[in-house]
Amino acid sequence: MKKYNFRYYFKNYRFSSLFLKNFLTILLVLYLPLSLTCLGISLYFQSAWFDEVTSAAEGAVANVQEIVDTVQTNVMAAAINTASDTSVNRFVLTDEWDFPSYEVAQNIKGVMRDLVVSSGEYIDSIYVYSDRNGYLLSNSVSSSSATFFDMEWLPYCLEQSQSLSQWTWGRSGVSQLGVRQPYISTAGSVPYSISGTTEGFVVINLSGRWIAELVTQRGTAPLRDFFILDRGGRLLFSLDSGRLGGTLEEAGYPAGGPGDARLFTAEDGQKLWISCSPPSENGWLYVAVNSLEEYDRSVSSMQGVVWVLLFALFLVSIGVAYVVSLKVFLPIQNVIEMMDDPKSFYDQNTGKKGGAGYNELRYITASFLQTITKTERAEQELIQYVTRLKETQTALLQAQINPHFLYNTLQTINFMAISLTKSDNQVSKAIGMLSSMFSQMMQVDSNTIPIRDELDYCRSYLDLELLRHGGEFSVEWDVDESLLDCFTVKLTLQPILENAIKYGLDNPDEPGKIRIRLFAREDAVVFAVEDNGRGADDARIAQMNESLGDVSPFIGTHIGVRNVHERIGLVFGSGYGLTFRRSEQGGVAAFISIPKTMEAGKPAP
Image (cartoon, rainbow, N blue to C red; front, side, top):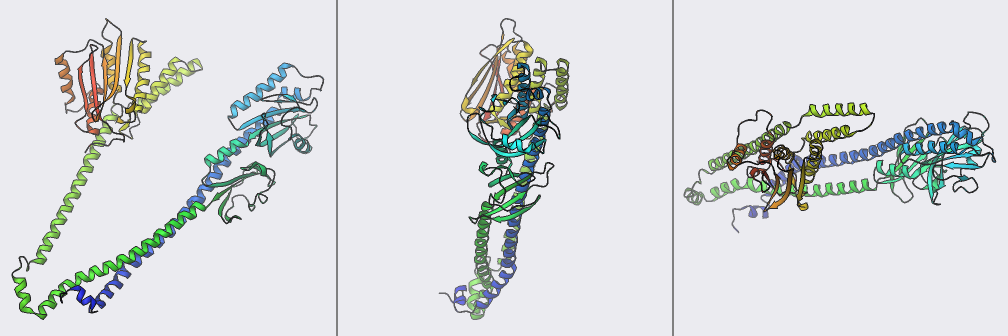
């Protein structure tokens, strides 16, 4: 081992004080601040995650509450309106042996049908029951109360009708198929009055399955349970229908007031977050029980990462202290060598090339590296600038065929056409299709779309053209289905089709025909659009291809075809774009070449 080296002094403890000082310095300057920062970030994210989880749970409860309260308000109003209906009152007040006419029954059936249709999926069934004649009408089947499949609600209604004109409760009912399912039922006395004799009831059953689906869709995962309680604290709804009519305590959860939110540990040791809704107009309380198991796992994982990171930082501190000490020791080593043997040190360093200019060489190298770094940064900024410039140019070219005002005008004309006939008509349908097309053209947030979407848009456009021209031409499609998920520049094909229709219908000898092909050629995807018009000679075809390379700015309105060629070049590069040839059908054939890519394209650098 050479005497004048780092290992020698480190082994013999002559360097230990320098290493210790460097280590303590790095520990205070590097490790301690980074450790405190990691711990602070950990605590911050832990608090932020918890706030996010609880806020999402409370927001989901409020969302469900808003929807269900609105639906229940409509149900209560529907129950009152139905109980006040003339036909319903005639049916309920009819004696047992004097059954009302078929017209009355059909009127009631119509009322039920209208309610079910207008309510969507949240009203499961509607009953109109007459205590006088013992008969029950529903939106599905009608029969006497003795044979009707769901009559468990009747005793409760008889009890409530002694003091109330309308009431709501949660129950487990029986469907027409004999299957048990949860309901939130709202009933009203008939004739409807605050006080008076009750001759029958109107019962509207709100589907518990619809509420369960709503809770599942609008709730936050992982959702353990969800409850709706009435003013008296009884369960109107629960994901477990066997709990209906009970209390929250009987379900195993602590009772809470409106707006309460708290942690709760279940019997199995799982941490839960219980969110209660704020007060609602009907006095119902909505309670969501969310599991914090996933949150706890995330916190534990983050804490594990933090401890590993702190340990890694400690090892890095030791390594940095060692490297710094080594670098600091190198000039000391030269001094020690010179002091121990000046002549030998002089002889060794005098003959070294650049020995005396070591510091200058190091300075020049650092300056050179700094210059390279600045150059690379400038190149990156230039690339970003060119990319943004091309994106801006692409958006500008796209905007040239985005007539926003025309879209709004078509919408206005559409409403006027509907108002004239008081219903949809062919004109309204055509205007609606055209408005939809302009709406898609105005979506310029992305330069590229899947070929599948481009072809769907073109089919809509061709349908409108066929409608406009009265079937004066036909369209033939030849599409390779495996290429539909590749990406192309938006509005690639439609301007070419417009051009083909315009010039393809100028042949009076035969009906117009447009042929559209999509096929692969090596690593490229090719669109081909051919017509059977009068066509063009070779000189005209050459002139058309030459005009595509014109770099002058667009002037005027006839820019559709060249616009397509320019945008393809900006997005995919100059090797792709549009070319014209003579068609085998007698007209002109346009070929569009783009790269075969399964990802959204970006502007070519």
